[in-house]
Length: 226
Image 1 (spheres, helix red, strand yellow):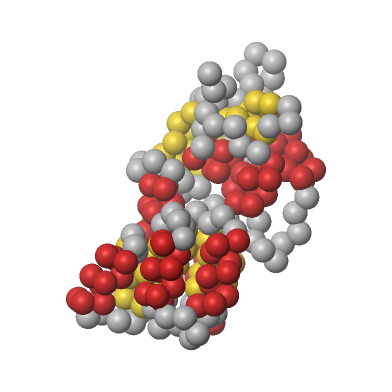
Image 2: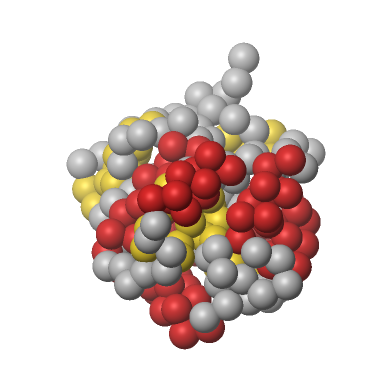
C-alpha cells in the first residue's frame, strides 16, 4: 500500500510515517503544503491520502475540492485540529471519507487507515483468502497450507497488494507505483525478484501456481481472468 500524508506539522507526519513503514510496511510520501500535496496527489497513485485542513499555500478543504473535481478517487482521511461540527460536515461533504481530530490515538488512526484502504478495493473484511493463502491484513500474518509463512516487509507489501486485486492482471509498473515511495529507487527487475521469492515461500510449482505471469502484461494472484 502507498499513502500520501499532506501535513505541515513535520513531527506528526514523521510519526505517522514511521508507524506505517515499520509496523505495517506501507510506502509513504509526505507533502508539507497544499501545492506540493496537490501535485503529488495528481501525479502518483495512492491507496490513501491523509489530509490536514490547516495547510499553507492551499487550504485542505480547497485542495480536497480541487482533487475531487479533477477525478481523484483515492480515499481521504481528514486529520485536523478543527473539531467544530460544521468543519466535520464540510470536510465529509467536500469528499472526505473519514475524519479524525488532533490529538489522536495512533492505533485508532492505523485501524482507520487500513479500513479505508481495504474498502477502496472492495474488501471490507481484514482477512483475505485466495488460492489457499490466508492473509490477515490487520495482523500482517500470512498462512499457506495451514502453516505460517514468514515474509520480508517488501514481500508482504507485494503479496497484500496482489491480494487486494486478486484475479486482476497487475502490471510491473502498477506494482512499482504502489510499493515504493517517491524517494525510493525501483526497477522492474526487482519486482521479478520478489515474485520469485514469494513463489518459493508459498510452495508454488507446476501443480499449484498461485501467482501467474502473463507475458508482457503482468501478474495475477489466484485464478486467471476469463
